[in-house]
Length: 131
Image (tube, rainbow, N blue to C red; front, side):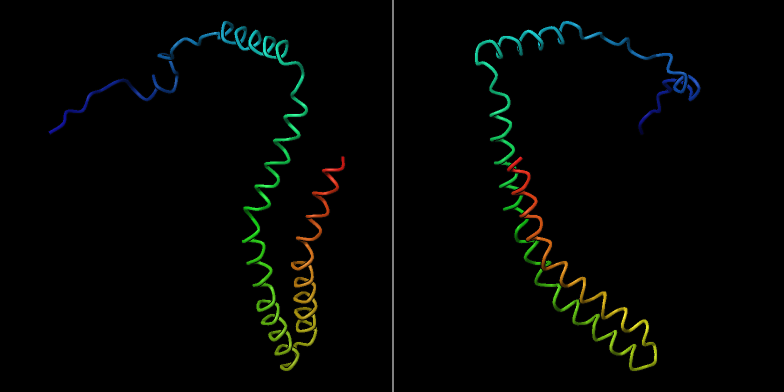
């Protein structure tokens, strides 16, 4: 059977009397600063060109990675909007015409938005590339 070892009280823990002293880290900060300065002097200022290339590559990978998900949502939007419109039609049939027409209107607008948003996002990506 394991023995329980007492390491202190809750009040000692809450007061944090046994905290380890913090190290300043000035040597590390100085070394990083010197390293950045040496790289900058050696290779010149290539940070802007590298950032643009990395940004374009990351954008392309993210767009490619999410393409199947976008296609799935676009494919599911038709049956979901159809069911919502049918439900709206049933509401109209049972006398809840205001709610029924509202459901039909929202389902139609939602379908159009789901179909158009990927095109609008592509347009926004092209606009940001031009800036």
